[in-house]
Length: 116
Ligand code: 5GP
Ligand code: ZN
Image 1: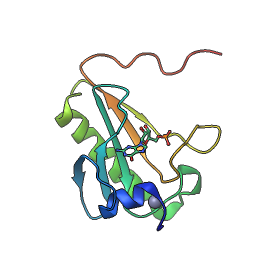
Image 2: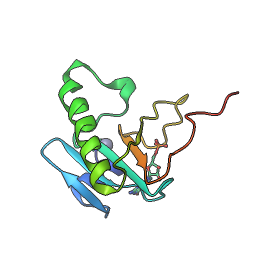
Image 3: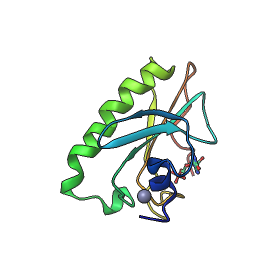
Image 4: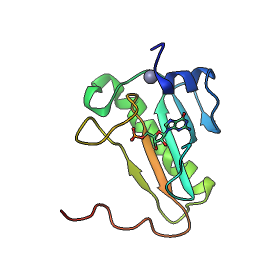
């Protein structure tokens, strides 16, 4: 995907604070962190959204979560963290390349969602 922001980050065309990469996934610091630890875990392959993922994506999705756990611990959130995958319009997904937010830090991140 030539014009995709996160594909450009994977290719190094846009700089990022990289934390980890392997053949399938890329992890970097969110540019606008919501908590002391705020990582974005993405597949290197362009997948637009969790809503467009398929059975073929099961291995990379699984690896994203396992790596997320290790990196959250290493990056300063050893007592737990939250994984958020905003999806589509209702999920308020702003960047159209699947990404998992890993948020945490020394203090609890707070309740999941406010009641409406
Ligand atoms: P979404 O709302 O799509 O789930 O989250 C997109 C996230 O990407 C936001 O938290 C935003 O701060 C982050 N982001 C947007 N542009 C960039 C960028 O150029 N570099 C980095 N590192 N993060 C970005
Ligand atoms: Zn992309």
